[in-house]
Image 1 (tube, rainbow, N blue to C red):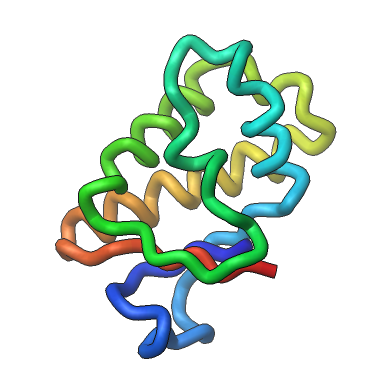
Image 2 (spheres, helix red, strand yellow):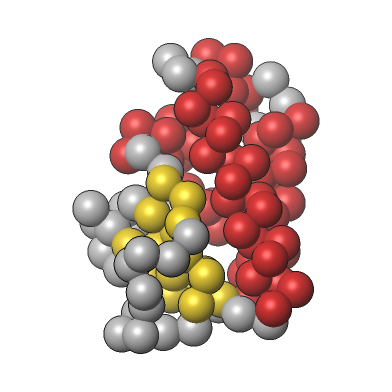
Length: 110
């Protein structure tokens, strides 16, 4: 799935800046929730196969999840640590930008 900044799925420009999250990475986050001492459900419960508008009010939660994932060692057991780290850092940056612009995120599923 790919994350974009915007307020409407219908008006989304697919050529705009986005962050790709592999199905394996979102599945990894979901499967490892019990090992985390923070709630990651706002990220792990996004359907990777549907297009989803993520309201601006949820972005702080997702930003906190990203920051916690980057601070902990939970990603150490992921097959491609660099890819995971890059995707999560990119999503964190995208959330910060959307919050600053008072916009939402859009997840485009596979």
